[in-house]
Length: 160
Image 1: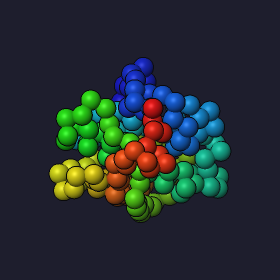
Image 2 (image 1 turned 180 degrees about the vertical axis):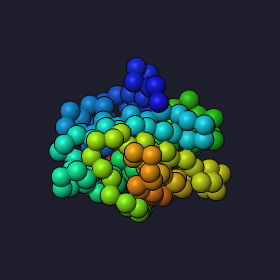
Image 3 (image 1 turned 90 degrees about the vertical axis):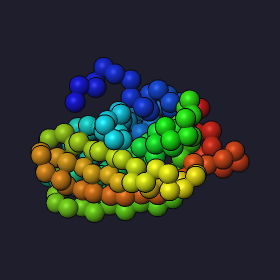
Image 4 (image 1 turned 45 degrees about the vertical axis):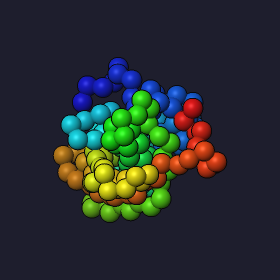
């Protein structure tokens, strides 16, 4: 993936976000950077030593956070594209699950894919599938239900 110098989805639409997983403005956060791919979003993440659960293996909570945030952005972009919007709606996680398929080694980059399972199923929500590979092996898979929130919801203006 050659996206290092490109503007990520998060940098384009939520420069001021403080989200721990995906907020460009959170200096203590993971600052994931998602990019469009053929059928959804893709991202790379190089874990730091502090992201380990025990020597040589990445913490499951870090993996869950990455999948949740990347999946949330895949939902927002899918709704934006489906509805012909100029900007993605603010979406939040209604539910998500993660299956840790094998220990995720510290060292290699994580490659995460996220895509809409059925973008036209509901009007204000969307189901997203996620897959994380590390060292050429699938280490985690997940799915989530994400909802576009309206004015009055506490997260409504979080990306502006």
